[in-house]
Image 1: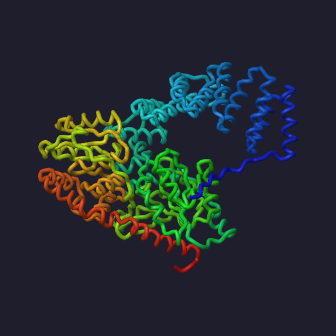
Image 2: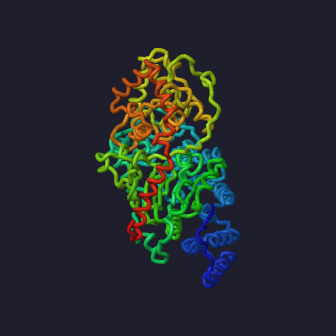
Image 3: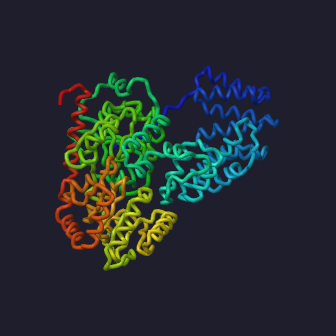
Length: 628
């Protein structure tokens, strides 16, 4: 494995510019430079990328000026220091500005950002709160006072959500939307944070927000949980791409690179992701990269994943021929690096999920660009022409709603890891499960649950005496809301048993305890379905119209249990009740999976990788102009 950390180019000061800088510094030190002249000179330096020189100039000017204008120079200096990621120095400068002018809202907002960068979130929230809760903040820079207040409120909501303080975050979002309804980004987070807490109805009116505004500003991820309509999912992707993704009109970077260095030799596959760590994508793909045929392929990672220090992260890194750490590069620089590396097939493992960098793909750094795993839906991203699928998850009737063309694998689209570590098998008593009850289970994330699915689960419990439902305790508010929903449905809340989050080996081991896993709809289980089938526990799913609502059905087909696939809510309920009333049926599924599951097509990972390679090779050779 070769690890490269390319750096963006740094700009040196040419001789002529150096002379000009010295002249400006002399004027600043002598007191002969007005504030306007200072700002003009500093802006010129910033436009040329000479941020350190701009800092020098501001600091020289501040040494000789004590006028009221000093506060403006301090603010601008803090901004440049922030651009240079010098948070401690920026904090000191903003505090000096605020000592001179305590009602300087912009400086307080920026101070909050620097405190967040310094890992002092409570202090950041305090600074933003000073602006957020002020009825009519002073406005020394001429900006709209409402916008300053909204900036503070929205920053608080964002940081509180990151800290998993969901009710506090939601309250700030409501405050923001009551002040101004037309805020798409706030609406997007408002809907999803209600999903995370199982606060139903998710689309709860607030302020002057219209139902249409709420729907059209729902993120694609939240839409995948809320609607099985592929047209609605397509529109959610389209809105994101229109608002957030670069409309690049220049030459494809892979074409520019190929002129300088034609693609020859082994086919180079690049995997693009910020999730090559302890994440569902990292867990699923851990075996994939090492299985590639090194006589025919070179395997590269273009990665901005967090260094979480886990054995999984180390294993993933070791699986690549070369790892390019592109976290410090902007999207254009990252795309140029991919193009220079001569990548033939670039596989995007994120799509439009959290932390994705879709603009890298917009520059077309590789001739073949493919979507896989991270987003089980169309992304509508310019530059992504293909999506890995199978004929179950992506039937013909789905194709009009997908901008990518399918790369069909013969059995199942999903790879998994046959080397995943499994902990010691627990007992039911360890998790508070009754020994003699039928245990239904769903370890899907809470945001995948809907009132329709949960209502179905309550009817299933009511029809199977003594049965319990084992759920993931993702957060306290979701737990409490689900208990209240159970009581409202006439089911004793004690029949809901919540499992804490545990390390992956222990998470896998506890799949031995339930009798039947119940899938969510329309956002099916993906990694979770693979895990429970690997551990020999059956899962009942409902398949719908979209890729994401057919994921689990694909896995069940490949493992040889298609009779656990249903196609309507009524059928889903009926099948779950039948199995619950005849525990021997659940036991027979478990026995089948123990005896045949791991040898099925679902877990023939070498075959899946080989099929993928055949398609990659065909597309790469066609792009090179070589007959396959």
